[in-house]
Amino acid sequence: MPRFSTTAALVVVVATVACASSSGSAESGQTATRSARRSNEVMTEQELRESTVLNALDAVRQHRPGWLRSRGATSRGTQSEPVVYFNDVRMGGVESLSQFNLGSIKELRYYTATEATNRWGTGHSAGAIVVVPR
Image 1 (cartoon, rainbow, N blue to C red):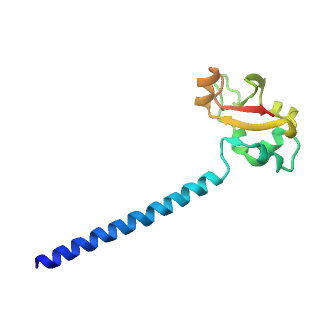
Image 2: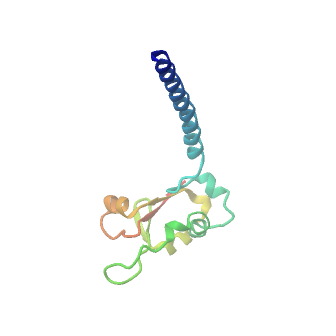
Image 3: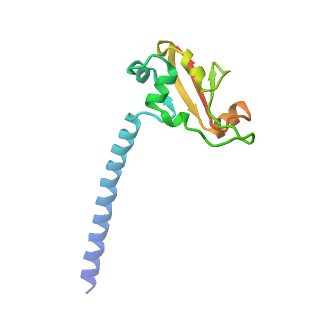
């Protein structure tokens, strides 16, 4: 009887190690896949170059429409939209993105409401979109 228990224990240990090692390689493959995918917070220069539109607003509408989603009413009852910044200068609402030609942009970056408030102060209930020039 003791021999059966030792053999069973050995099988369990070997099976556990095999599962752990195969799971680890699958996880590393998943991590590589995740890093190869696009970021939800950044539109890179390469992604902008591959776009079929001409200005930043159309690019965001086409590739990251979630950035433009209304986050509900503000305390004054108006709809909230992200604030646009260019070189840390506040440009206005999302319509100001239409003045930026994609050829002059290195990246577009979205900040959540919390991130934007921590960086620029209150008034960012829908977050912020930052235009980083070339």
